[in-house]
Length: 130
Image 1 (cartoon, rainbow, N blue to C red):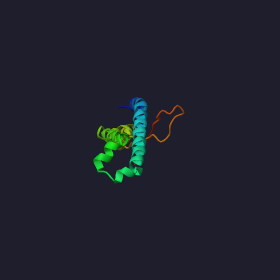
Image 2: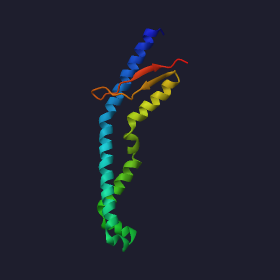
Image 3: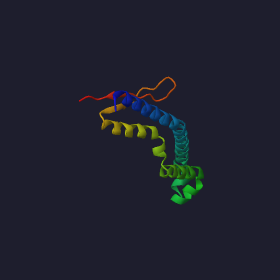
Image 4: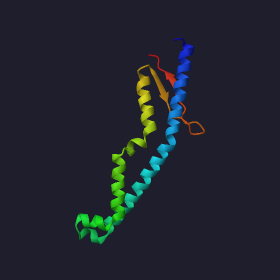
């Protein structure tokens, strides 16, 4: 391959990677919002559960039965983690890190630290000469 074809391949790869990560952003944002809402609900329910004077007087399961908001929030949060929400909220970062790992084998790197004005990922290709 000549250098012109290689440059075109890199541009096509960059466009595809940018497009893919950009398409993940709305879904990632929704997962983050869901995680924040459920975490706040769980924290609020936990606070109400802990400050209730009846909690110390009854058994653990009875106290959970008396605080259904906390119980449901906690079960939902645990279910979300079992469903892999922790991976979904950082999916673009995982993809970018894996691309960096693969590109490192070819003495190249992708710098995604700068974002364009419209919040799209812009990759800058750096050829490492060593």
